[in-house]
Amino acid sequence: MELRPYQEEARKAVREEWAKGVKRTLLVLPTGCGKTIVFAKITEDCVRNGDRVLILAHRGELLEQAADKIKKSTGLGCATEKAEKTCLGSWFRIVVGSVQTLMREKRLGQFPSDYFDTIIIDEAHHSISDSYQNVLKYFEQARVLGVTATPDRGDMQNLGEVFDSLAYEYTLPKAIKQGYLSPIKALTLPLKLDLSQVGIQSGDFKAGDIATALDPYLYQIADEMETYCKDRKTVVFLPLVKTSQKFRDILCEKGFRAAEVNGESKDRAEILEDFERDRYNVLCNSMLLTEGWDCPSVDCIVVLRPTKVRSLYSQMVGRGTRLCPGKDHLLLLDFLWHTERHELCHPADLICTNKEVAQKMTENLEEAAGCPVDIEEAEKMAAEDVVAQREEALAKQLAEMKHRKKKLVDPLQFEMSIQAEDLAGYVPAFGWEMAPPSEKQKATLEKLGILPDEIDNAGKAAKLLERLNMRRMEGLSTPKQIRCLEKYGFQHVGTWSFDAAKNMIDRIAAAGWQGAPNEIIPHEYVPEK
Image (cartoon, rainbow, N blue to C red; front, side, top):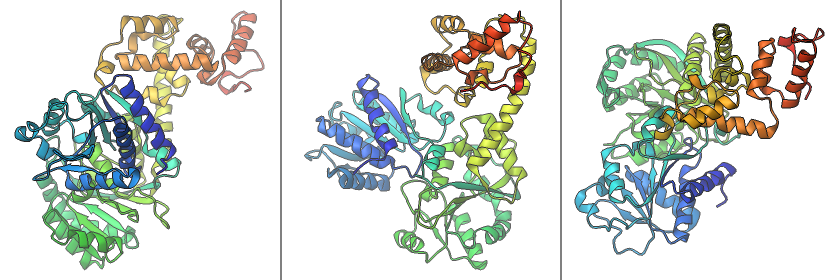
């Protein structure tokens, strides 16, 4: 099986991390981008090197899916370590193992601690739990790859406790732009649901409290769905099984062909098959279908289980992002959840890496309530709004710091000038990144023209130094040139070449540093390429 370009890049990046001596690394791919295929190929590479590989997951469906994909894409068979099944005595080099089985001391004790050379964790956002930690500590010599669809670095601050690096990340916007996932249109509905009294349990909203808060609104939600979802294939996520069953009945009253599945459904496989064959057009569930189930023809997702866990939100929406003939976009229904807590996930959290932009995008979507908006366009507009706000704030800040270290550029000014959203929105994820910048980093930044006082972590310092080095090799303007020319009113000098900036500075110097040449309006000026 031939991998897509980004899948091959991911495979190569993981191998490079291991070759550098990084034992535990992460791979982030959005739901629907073939992460199982990628780790199947990485598994094949390991087996060719003589390794014994353990694929670790927390659900039987994920283990079956992994074994099936490995067989189809590599021809290699897998042994199973789950319940009464054991891999001991098998000649297969690959084992798919249930974490619930392997976490037990008695089960682990049957294996030598060096039995596995490589461990691959599917849905790695679960790996911070005690059950996974027991297994990883026992096989502590093994190299580890975690694979997840976690959409942003906020969640990865927790994963940074388990993993040492991020080998490769393929983002949802990139996957949509390159045609591998369906575009998403978010529709905010003007139905205000009060979550202010909902409690928190294990880091998320209590399902029982959400169900109580949601119950009075179910008929109104069904009315809204009648307007927007009648001709769509819809999956609805709800907090409790009884709420899911009640909502199915309400939808059937409204004329939908609705079905419900839960962990106790004896006819679950039959219902899922009937839904895929369009016997039903709405499928209600209480968080059962977040992982390990694919139906590409789903073109509408309704999240009635509000969450502040981005990985969970991403998994829910991911049930509808796969491509399918005749499907031109996924419709994502969002509601005006009323809560005093700002960490509630919204469509913006699928695509924004920056909290400021996400907050602005959510505000903009709420203002456009009732109109479907493409999330990429919404993110672009929000980013422009935030940049405008930042530039206004920066102008005030620069006026205040005119007399401080006049020759150095404030990091924020540099980021704005070179239009580096990734630097402006950077959040440290791993331990070393969170430490303060080293004296060597600060001295180098100052030497290169950046004021280091405002940089509070080593990760940001490393990113800035890396960007400065890359710009030097590409012949782009220096921080000192940016500082000099923007003082005279020129804008985004960071996008100029070194030679264009030098030429303008020479002209200003020749005129006695009195200002820009007469024929030039600085804030409108763009140098010729």
